[in-house]
Length: 210
Length: 210
DNA sequence: AGGGCTATTTATAAGTT
DNA sequence: TAACTTATAAATAGCCC
Image 1 (cartoon, rainbow over the protein chains, first blue to last red):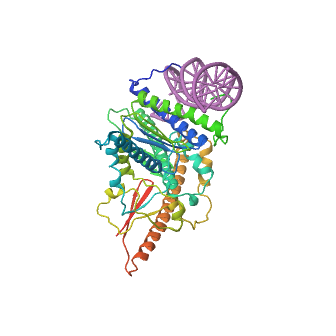
Image 2 (image 1 turned 120 degrees about the vertical axis):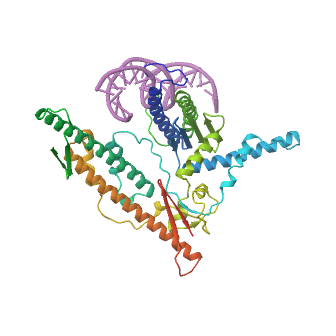
Image 3 (image 1 turned 90 degrees about the vertical axis):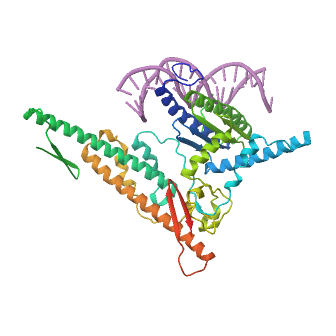
């Protein structure tokens, strides 16, 4: 699918590996979602990038829902297998790998804390133009109608946009400062640097040079 | 990808839904594998067909390996699932859910495990849509193309929205805390107030009561 | 460094056996 | 029912910006 055919082996070039990861991750999640919707099945997808970042997708409310189902399934399967083993050999074998691992779960089952989960949120496409990113949130719902998960997601994205806005402002200020400085250098062609005072008050930038 | 374009909704015809499931499941697993190999990342994929059959793929030795990694990751983010209906009126006793978060609160031992879903909280305010305020800025231009004045204006508005989002989150938390407190009072009808500890980590709220 | 652009490869919907 | 076939929709590699 692309200009060249791809060999099924690790992409050695770090840059293009990263690019491919980003693209294909999106594609995979899209397809996972399509499968879930079209065929009305439960799908869970976990991806750990090489830097340890987790990307997840699930077709249900929460990933835990599917993982819990997996645990139950695995337990049943293990039980069936164990029964079969016993019938065959009439002896209790050593525990196989799967049943050993299953012991991890029961330990985690008691709950004394009060916990609230607000609908798992899986953002399929967090990337993109920061404005486009937020656009979809703005079309339909009122803040008052959003739940905690949505609010938190929105908060994150707003924060990201705010950071970009401020970054851009800084850029512009730097440009302006540079221009002023160059202008100043022209007037006072000295080897030492001028001081530039930038005053931020309201929307306008004021600058003075000494 | 095929003779006809596909609508992203459940395929109603059972036969073709099954055929599509079979085909797309294979395709999805193939792509999951490609992502894992090409980009050298860990991928786990779980699919439960509508008949409850489990199909799984993982890029590592065992699925448990990735799930364990997810659990570790989840300890930081904390994930718990919840059924919606029971929470409608605030508080439901649940003792057998995940307790991974407990490790984060070793000192917090409440008498009762309670889970709530804030998404269900009602009594919403009915103010105008604060998001409309910003809408016009998002339609046309990119941040890169805005000048300082526009950026500053946008910054202000974003900040205002952010404050509203956070206010709304606080409201929801207060509601939840109140509900928890009432539940607690029910169990311990004492005149003095319980302590409620609310932990905000990511999109989820964790609370413990002492 | 992420977004847009094709030329190509892939996936697959529908049809056929 | 599942295995092929084929026309077409989708994904995406390599580029450019």
